[in-house]
Length: 113
Image (cartoon, rainbow, N blue to C red; front, side, top):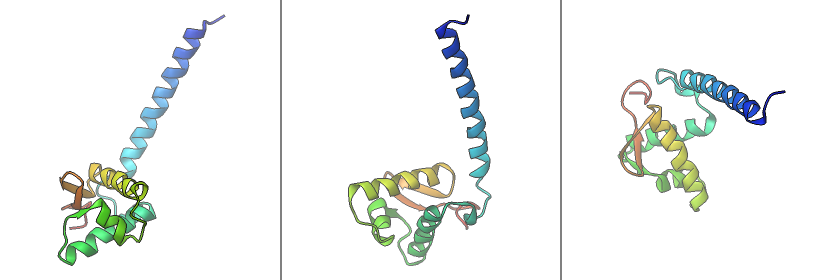
């Protein structure tokens, strides 16, 4: 009979392998050369907002400003949700964060320029 610790170690190893597989899939999905259509609709709206505001003379936006343009209530939960999405977009090459908390559309294929 296997020990409880042994069973837990086996399950942990299997879980780590599944996480690694999913991480590889996520990296393929978020490949920077993909078009904006590959993103979820809310991410597309955020990038469209950055594009529109950038062409209107506001290339760098705070999360509060993005939240307001998206028509969301400017409450901490909404701003934090936008900040979290912007951090993900920046991590994957779709946006840049030139100063903490302020974002702009990335230069290059992911950002559309």
